[in-house]
Image (cartoon, helix red, strand yellow):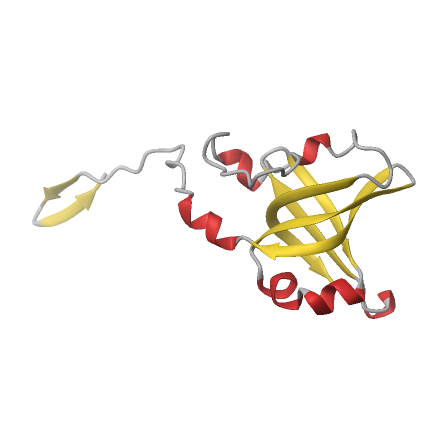
Length: 141
């Protein structure tokens, strides 16, 4: 069973796509080395001890995921956004290896403030809140 992407739970108009951000489902279209901007929720941050200071980030938008590679020099420049951002806009170059595409980051911007404009969708199952009294005790339905 595959979980639905977090942002897919919102309507297309609910996610305020940052200007010039490419939907993740379209990242297979730009050529190797093309400069792109992507944005999305941070799902995973990894900084393996064996990666020589490289940080790997997985972002999600309403169309899918994007793999981000942040080299040490870029990490040092944008440390606060990389470490603390819940939602990021990343600009970099497309790199493909073994059929898997990555965005090698040049800039990283924390755009977590955009999440404040999202309202959670209503629950799919309504909650019953009516109550009635039976034998002097309140019963909830």
